[in-house]
Length: 398
Image (cartoon, rainbow, N blue to C red; front, side, top):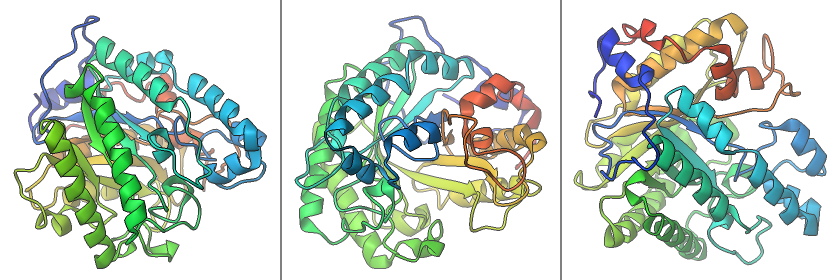
């Protein structure tokens, strides 16, 4: 295990510089404790959940002008299944896991739609062979590199945040909806069974929801005002149900709660500190905060310290990226990446970058130089050598 606080070059090198690869078949059977585990992770976005900006050429060729996966499948009709099955087989492969492992990645956060786990009447989201592809990649990552897998149910029935990633644009119907709750628990039960039968239950954390917000004013997204107190109460009730379900099968499997941007301090009072619960905090700089590439590092450090909460539960930064709202520059990227990794490692249980790969070039221009593929693709950072010598910044954000 790694120390909870990294204060020296040697300690940071241990986290970000040492290989996590093990001989085939040498994966650990010890369950992780997020209180003393350190994650150096990435998300596998655009694979089992589709987002338009991650691969704009693919999206433009298949979406029929839709803004979200719900609309993409509606427009494709009977072709949705074959198109997405081809996507599942090709966007993330073992070669991607090998590349990520070469940069000492030890955690994969893998978003899925609820349709990977249940069939919901009336839903346009596709239910197919997602679990097969997930199992194949997870097993490879675990057996070859001893990686830890976070299975993230990125959307829930009815919609958790009014965005395509939450079910569909404009859908907020998950909140205070008993039918949606019932189907959500069915999805959770399916994930629990997936982990239980994986052969490697010690290598999984279950994340049952992503970015739950009920404020329809999108300008509040990413702030504590995005989720109302009544919405937070509904989320808390749901999480207690998830903890109960997981606990009845295996209490050693952690549950990860995405905080809806309210922070761990807000929720910690509602849970027994003995629960195997870890909070997922997201930090972004590309909108709404007035950040430029010149001051991203200050925000990274502040976010890391604020994320730590009241100390009752471990904290994981499950999503972040280095794109700034203003004046992005190529020359700043390596420093911003290294500073963020350092800050989140010092003050939390580590992080997972969003995302492993973004196809480029693409038509998503950023303010300043380049496109989103230049700022959001971890594999591109690996190719550019940005993930080497990260210990140079070990003295940052003490």
